[in-house]
Length: 507
Image (cartoon, rainbow, N blue to C red; front, side, top):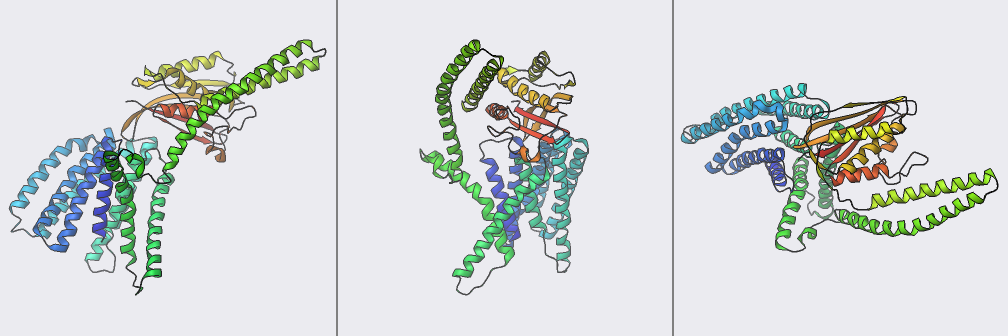
């Protein structure tokens, strides 16, 4: 059952990665690796059932294809750190072809055990080579990339240790063979790593895995509950069997849904929404809400601005007629509050409207430098210093004015967070995220930081911790960056400072 489960899980992952709308070289290479693993395990499972020479050949083909596929994936996953594997990949393909030809010529006189021993030795050497390159990459990487590679290395080591149970099982000890289950867990863990590269922290990655585990456990419990209620002889199947079956079902759900959506979109006019779940309909609702908000904001701005203009005009006239200084001061308050309310209306209108970026190929270093000049020309407190660190960046398609607005907004927030003075740091960097080249802009301060409870809400419209803040600045920034196909991350520690990371595709 474990062999069948590993074959099914590998197939589901391979198919889901291949039919995804957005593909990248890492996903494609991992799909190839998973498909070769499927061929290997499916052939082994069917050969154990039937003893057919055909399935024996499929099993051997699959297992011999694993090393080249492993070299291909690791070289792309590790990027520049995996150049050695990229060079070894063609030699691995050639050796696989030679080994396959040799085995099929003499397969009548060579036992499966002997053949499997040579092949597994070949695979273990390949895995050892990839592991050495991976550990080398861990030591040479930095930041979030180092964490991701370290998690993969630890998971691979744990899989190796757990797989040792097969040795004791084959020696007659009462130890279950866990290699297939551990490899299935590793395959899914690596899938999470490459699919969610924006989750550099281990607890975030494990939370994704925990959700799947809870779902699998829920399906298992439901199955046993149905057997208890409706089963006649109350004969319960083995728990491991049901659990692995539930694992297969859960993993296959998204894959089957993707296939059905593509098929429905091809054959039926309304196919795109035919197989959308009730929960996925939330995205459609959100789009409708955005359109409604834009229409409402336009009408609301018109209805509010006209009375505000009248109130401001009347206050200014009455101020000139006021006999006392106290009266003029009150009218000043009215004028200032009217201006503030008008500013809130304008920012709400900016947030609600759909952006149509007027993009051009621009140098983000120039945009950052221009923003720094604007800040210095403003009322920059004497106690605040500005530093900038620039990397060589390719020109990217962005709206220069909107990007300046985003960087300036975050910089002004940083300045306000340093009432006692500090350092405002700008930096740029070129990195690879999910196989895509990304340009990163970092705006960091050494201020009071953001409270842990507020971190989850800082991008929500109208959420603010300042007395006269509108709570729309960061919400507008995130919307602009999303329109550019990027995203914003934030890290903050109370009393130590805050850093905003803006990432935009470089392609």
